[in-house]
Image (cartoon, rainbow, N blue to C red; front, side, top):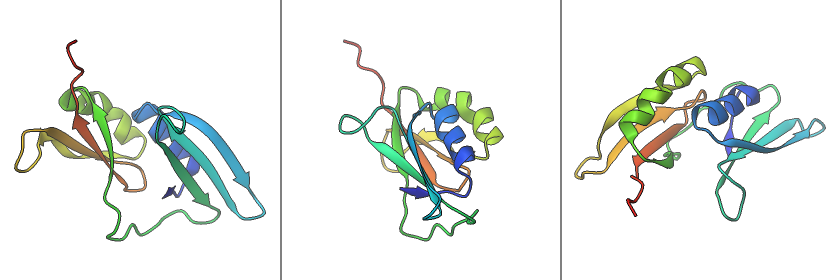
Length: 129
């Protein structure tokens, strides 16, 4: 679950930039929060991310416990190039350019969402057959 400052902005980021689907939403006005679930498919076959908007809170301190979400992509450099403008337009950024992970050869990059959460892109080429 990620707490977000603007639910519609975050839904836009995860669906338009990362290509996830908006799976479902829940509104809880009496409890003063709304939820949106995004992902590439539904549980249990796929992971889902719960986005939580608490009424009246537009910013959170992320603290030092959160690391990042990781998503496999076929080509990190091409993905970053394709996402760069969309990411910036929706309040995110490419924060680590594509390159090998320290001490290894796996290609990675990092982007941030509009609330500052990190998303690692890990190169996972499609198998050739």
